[in-house]
Amino acid sequence: MDFKVGDKVVYPNHGVGVIEEVAKRTIGEVSSSFYCLRILSTDSTVMVPVGNTTVVGLRKVLTKRQVTKVLKTLKEGEVATYDDWKGRFQANSDKMRTGDIAAVAEVLKSLTILNEVKPLSYRERKMLDRARFLLVSELSEAAGKTPDVMEKQIDTSLEDSLAGLQDNVEH
Image 1: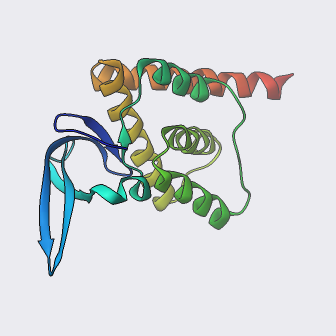
Image 2 (image 1 turned 120 degrees about the horizontal axis):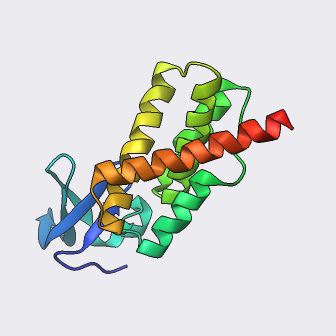
Image 3 (image 1 turned 90 degrees about the vertical axis):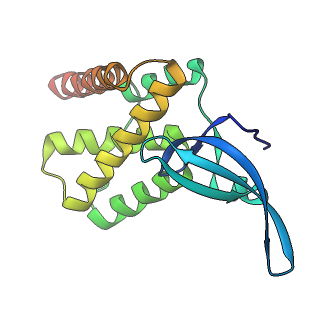
């Protein structure tokens, strides 16, 4: 996938960034092109080799239609649960690394629901916070809304999901 200066992109596990430059660098005798990204949340700079964008999962920010689909995923559908903490943590870590926003939404949803049942471990709490941050930052950027407004929409979708689960348990 080709990007140009000014494109807003998602760098997995770091969030939304802006391509500020496409630079050529020579290391030894090898000359390569790099995308220079500024990660919006941390104002840090990351260089990604142009040829490695697929490998690292660099992608464009979602469309508004995709935002609606992600919110629907949070609100509806099944949640994967694991009795084994290690298995659950590994599966969620793998999902977070993909950079796929739907997978990040699944992690947020499953850990939010689990957190209603029992306290999360420190590592899972950090993962829940990270998933929330990544979703809020990308969805707010894609929908053109403030992070506060988007966080409320995400919370409403999760509350609807939790209410639906409780209705299923009661019936």
